[in-house]
Image (cartoon, rainbow over all chains, first blue to last red; front, side, top):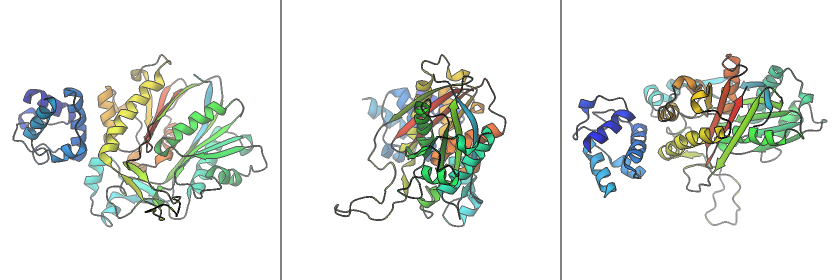
Length: 75
Length: 321
């Protein structure tokens, strides 16, 4: 799952792979702003065939939060 | 496909240029923030002109560029959501300013928000045949409906107008696509002054433009891709074969996302939102006229104009020049 999410993040925004760890903070460490987060959620929706709401995007802080969100949606 | 040509184009913007640094002085924002999130550096805002004036100046430029006279025009369609009056229409007042009141002319406005110019070209194409020469204008004075204390919206928009002359012509072909999906959730809206006073909780004041940027982004990127695919259906042309795509100039992030998603180079997309911001129904018209002035539109080229906006509305025009 982490590898798949890593790939989506790298495709959606230009960020080096080694920076993408579960603990990495989206805004502070990866430089993901509000619009990048929307872009990322669109990519995640396509990749995992899920729907992510705006409120859920706003609540994401770390890469682990993305993993948890995708996991909960896939169940 | 229809045998219609664009005989000429023109645009006009008001005199006052507002930079991101100017906006830093009035709202809590920064040049860096605006540029990174929108791609916009400047926008032109009216101090003395209204929508009729801007639309008329764009029309005069398009008429001159086409090498015709106002008397040749028998159809005027203006796409706007910021007309100067509820009635008379912007189109009728531009007809008067062009001095063709005594001619046989059909003139009217349409409102499809930022897709307005695409819708207006589509309507004109259906009417050409019965009419000989259409003046199609996108004109907005958005500064009238912007809350200049709202940093989320005031940085995005500008005023301006663009116009084209459309007429039957064997040399070029066009195909059209338009769609709408009613949305009353307030994602992108400016409430009007027309609510009946008897209605409960009726707001009598004119509302400012409100936008949920994230939701609009979601809609926009899908609308652009869908519109391009639909308009090319039946033309035998693929997106890769298009020489120039002129999208509605809302936000560079929307355009670059679509480019990446469709696997198309950014060089295919004409961009002038850095200079003019989002001018709603005027944006594609201004961009087309500017691209033509810069010599980027040449005979034989394959071009797509694509718009999306409140409503929701979206649409595209394919032109084989």
